[in-house]
Amino acid sequence: MGDALLRRLPAKVERSEEETAAAESLKETLRTTRIRFLRVYAEMVYCELTDDYRNFVRAEELVYRAADRYPGLTPTRAAVEAERACLQKDKDGVEIDQGIFLSQILAHPRAGPHLIHAMLRPRPESLERLAAFRHTGSADLGTALVERRGKAGYLYAHNTRFLNAEDDSTTDALETGVDLILLDPEIEVGVMRGATVDHPRYRGRHVFSAGLNLTHLYYGKISFLFYMTRDLGYVHKIYRGLSGKEFLPNEPETTHEKPWIAAVEAFAIGGGCQLLLAMDYVLAEEGSFFNLPARKEGIIPGTANLRLSRFVGERLARQAILFDREFPADSPEGRLLCDEVVPAEEMDVAIGRAVDGLTGSGIVSAAGNRKALRAGQEPLATFQAYMATYAREQAYCHFSPALIRNLEAHWRARSTKNAG
Image (cartoon, rainbow, N blue to C red):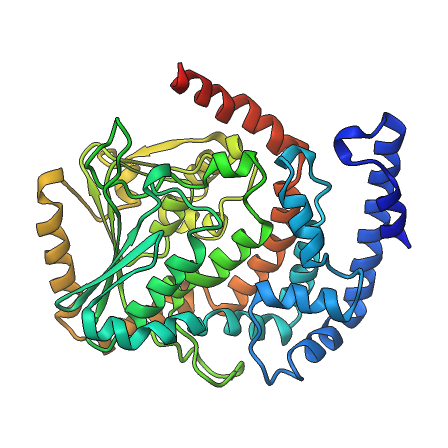
């Protein structure tokens, strides 16, 4: 009934002041009702959608199964696609209800770990590509490239038009690339690097990551599920590895994992900087830098709020997240985020040294030590609690007026300057 009332109102951009107030009141009431329902019935819903925990259903499928089985609980695919045609500022934010739903599922003591386990399983597309990748040693995934060289698997971010920024076109490709590296028995260590780009300022250079694609964000082409599939998917697989076929919540982690190296050239902005916090060894080019421009973007910087303070301390973490502090790789503070700063022309040699260092004691030792480090730093329960909060808060941030103001003030001003 509430959704029917909302549909009777004009589109957001055409509403009067009174109609805008009515729409916001309706949305708030509906969301409060959904939360109250899920507080009582979240596990019942999850059990039905997963055949009583027998099936591992990914987050991006789970939200739409919920929409089909419980109309009004989450938005339908059609509703999400309709809003995707709008600029970010003109959206009603139907995807916020996906965040509310996933937050309640992740907060549940049994459903939450089961969903995290599901997101750590290899993607079906990865399993389909594995034989060909093992045979050829390479895979072109569009916005990601994978290559096996000796004991190392190289994953290249390949969204070169946008300086290897991340958006809805990159998450599946990057996750498939991570899967292939983790599944290939000939590979003992993963290496993440940015592909060479054509941008006039960086033409022919490797660029690690420009963070979130703000062009796509402004034009409404970044889905809320981008954040969830990214941080529950490929980023978490780098950090924690692939889960097994069985869900064993009361046992120590039994993930299949490998150590990872990041090679930062030019910069690691936003999501690029977040990735460094999941890596085992970080190489940085002289003159490169890291930052988390979350304040300018108006969003939560992935899992950086969970992990950054372990590297730089609480005070510097707050400066980075709340005040846009930049970390030059060559600075004492930057050295807290990378292990080695090397001249640009020596990056390939440095990567080779790091690969040899990580594989010298054998992959079993490396994987075992990673698990032991995580047990004290970030047990699964800690990650679960963080992601339950993140799902809800990021959904509201993604559709907040503050995000639009920040984009207008920072992204559009920079775009106009560059165009001039």
